[in-house]
Image 1 (cartoon, one colour):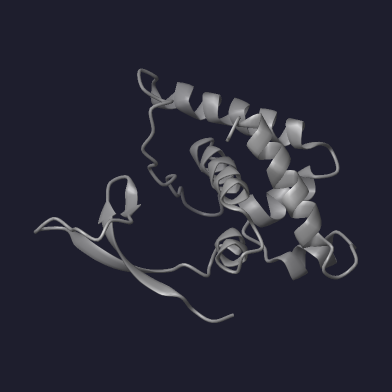
Image 2 (tube, rainbow, N blue to C red):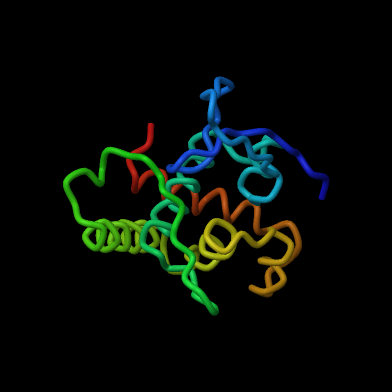
Amino acid sequence: MTRMLATRELTVEGPRRSAQCAANSRLVTVNLAESPLTWLHARGHLSDRQFDAGERLRADFERAQLSPSVTMRWDAVRISGTADRGLTPGERQIAARQRFDAAIADAGKGLADILWRVVCAGEGLPAAEKALDWPARSGKLVLRIALDRVADHYRMA
């Protein structure tokens, strides 16, 4: 996979996409090709709605801190939003877990595996297809169906 590098301003909420940076800000270079969703979206395999649904599901996954801990605690990326105002950090984590579980449940039992592997764990489609014992090139279609259901769950236009 080729690298698609972009420069972003690093803030307390994560990388900022805007071209304007503050005078004392820190710039980082990110690989846009790291996320399988970004890779698929950049090549026209996912619509904007499907991509946004996947990113929202991944954000809930990160806010709920559902990724496994290995040897040290990795704090979740801070994502700005209006949904978490007025809640304590523990309440935010519980609310994100409830949103994540509801979105996965609305996607359906057979689609939760591909969503978790590609959107949350960051596996590529070929690896997910092989792990799920699916035919080659079937994952893209199933992922699109799953992301459409997640977008319906989040009521995305």
